[in-house]
Length: 207
Image (cartoon, rainbow, N blue to C red; front, side, top):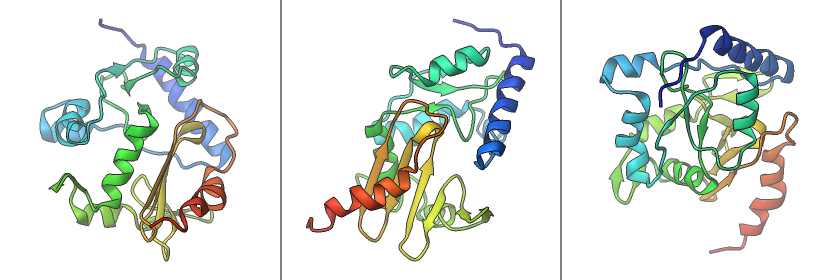
């Protein structure tokens, strides 16, 4: 099926996200991937499927087209939504719009915890794991790497924080990965505090 998206509508969605992030203190990302498309000659989804999703056993089969604000809200609140959002040029968004299950999110977290290896194969360079999870900028009092929030550099904990409370949390020292997948919540409570205070202690005495 081919969908035609008006650029004005997409820009309204992008502006809505930007305005919301400014109002809530969230970081605004560059949501396009044109450089990868130009360099590889593949769509972002095709490239990710071959080099990341398939090796990890993650299934992202199609693109998601959002024509307006109403479709955006509906998609974000549908537990059966799958796929990856594209912009009007058909390019997958970089920092949001990828719909994964909690199990699939955990696979990405485990890949990072294991230094980029999966089943003995190096999927992502270990150097990139280290580089992307250390501070490169700050947002208020929070440290930020490359699409990862650095929770505690000394304890080697970091997290990917998505819309409405979705989280991939990694504690390198304790060898823990925690993933939370939820419906979209405009004012999601602090998932990191929940993980540190209530989930991590459960595993303290595990061997």
